[in-house]
Length: 345
Image (cartoon, rainbow, N blue to C red; front, side, top):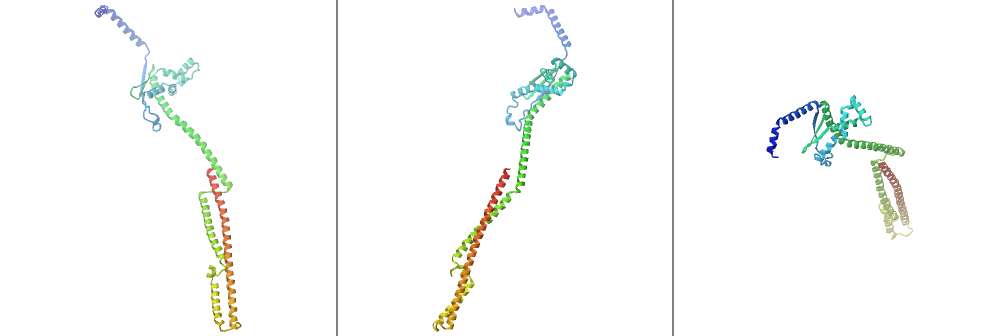
C-alpha cells in the first residue's frame, strides 16, 4: 500500500479516529483522577572522597565507580533500613505493629520486616562522573515519604561513621584490656621487688655500687703501696747488718761512734811508737776503742732489728689489705648481683 492510499483511508475515517482519541484521553484522565496520588521525595548525598589521614595509603579507590557502587549497596542494605525504622520509631505506631503481627504472626522481627518494605520503595542512583548519590522514595503520604528519605540519608551517614569508628573502638578495647593486664603484672612485680628489698634489708642503687667499687679501688692502691714498702724493707733488711747499709750510713749515733772510734784509733797509732803495750795511756785507749766497737756493733744490731720489725710490719699490713680486698670484692659482687636481680624484677 502506497503512503498516499494510507493517508486517504485515515482521512475518510477521520471522525472515527477523532472519537477514539477523545475516548482514550477521557479514560486516561479519569483513571489518573481516580487513582490514589503518589508522592516522591528525593535527596542527594555527597560522598566524602577525601583521603583518610591515617589510612590514606589504604584508600586509593575512593571516588571510583566501584567505590560508589559499594556506597549504593550500603544505602540499600538491611542494616541501613533498620536504622531508618529505629529513627522513625515505627514500633510506636499501633497500626503498623498490628499489621506486622497480622502478616508475620511475630515470626519475623519487626525491624527486619519493615526494613524490607522500605527498601522496596527506595531508589538509589549514583551520578556518573561525580561523587553524588541520589535517593528517592515514593508513597501516598508526602510527610512520610519525606521523613523516610531523610531517615535513609541520616542512617547511611550514621552507618558510615560506625564503619569507620568501630575498628578503632575494637582496637581501643583490646588495648585497654592489654593495659589492664600489663598494669596488673607491673603491680605484682613492684610488690615482689618491695618484698625482696624488705626481706634482704637492702636498698641497692647504682650510686652505692659505684661507691663500693671506688673503695675497692682505693684498697687495691693501698695494697700496691704496701707491696712496694715491703720490697723496700726486705731489701733494707738484707743489708741492714753491714756497714754499707743505708740505715747505718744515715744513723747519726753510729756515725758519731765511728768518728770517735776513728779519733781514738788515730791517737793510739800516734802513741804506739812512743810507749809500750803496758803503758796506761795505751791500755786506756785500747779499752776505749774496744768499747766503741762494741757500741757500734750494738747499734748496728739495733738498726738491723728495726729493719726486721719494719719488714714484718709491712708484711702484716699487706696481709691485712689482702683480706680487706677479698672481703670488699665479695661485697661488691653481692651488691652487683642484688642490683641485677632487682633490675630483672
